[in-house]
Length: 120
Image 1 (cartoon, rainbow, N blue to C red):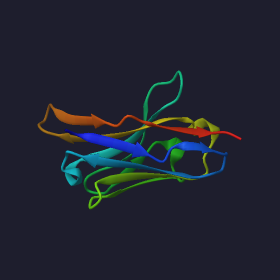
Image 2: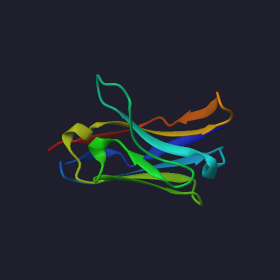
Image 3: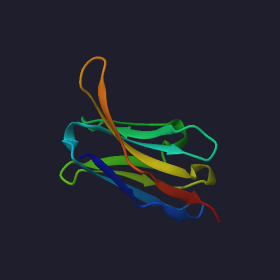
Image 4: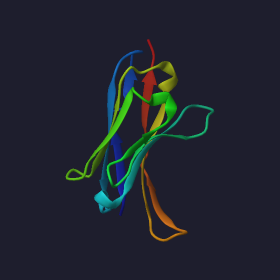
């Protein structure tokens, strides 16, 4: 059974920091690409950051320079360090894992989400 368990969300003031963690079980973590998505009320879920099995990373423009994604394969955990938080970062944040199994198919797994609220 595959599980992705997020933690680290909460309420923070603008300009503050949070670190989200996502611990995976039931998969060979090191071969999966990992990502963080977020969904604000009334908006579509968007990809915030991803880290590939190779270790390379990618970010949505709105968080570049503020957020850092990293992974610890020994702990089966992916992190999202969020600095200089803004009210517009308020959303539910979801951990995602995927790998391609063929040219046309892939395994996808999601966590349950953790809420981040940026407010004074």
